[in-house]
Each structure stands twice: as C-alpha cells, then as structure tokens.
Image 1 (cartoon, rainbow, N blue to C red):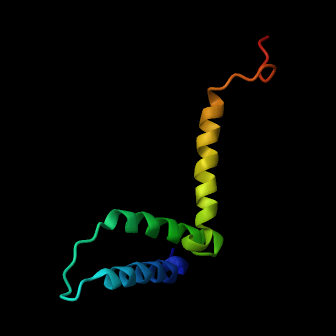
Image 2: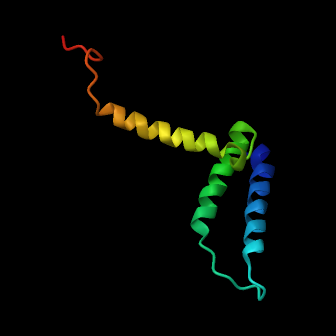
Image 3: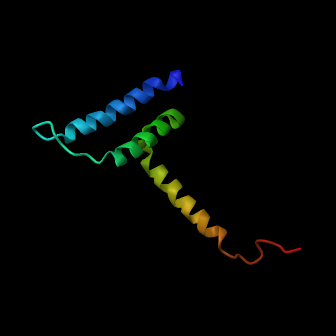
Length: 86
C-alpha cells in the first residue's frame, strides 16, 4: 500500500481541485459528494491496476458494466442444445 500512496494522493488532489472550481465567489457552495466519491474510487482502481486514469478508461468501465448486465440476462435465457439433461 505504501507504494500506492502517491497515487491515492494525486487522485484526492484532483477531486479537491474539482470541488474548488465549483465553489461560488463567496467560498460557500453545496456539493453532492457521492458522484465524486464514486469517481474517486474508480480513478484509484484504474490508476493502481491499469496505470491510467478513470477518465481515460471510462469507456472500458461502461462496457464492462454493460457486459455484466448482458451476462446476467443470459443466465435466464434458454438456448436449445446449450445444456444437456442426462
């Protein structure tokens, strides 16, 4: 984990920078943090596992989510000849 700490720090710094850009002129603003935390988690996983940011690999995550949904539907589908009853 110690090797990954710089990556965690960079991802958190990016998120805080985005929050700072969203602040109003009087430095008060309301932010829904949930989407940011979801993206932070994905970004940390992407950078540590794949070496690229979540923004760069966002399409890959979308395709994986779609593939998971399709696999779940396939479990309920009957394909003749696919399973043999002995």
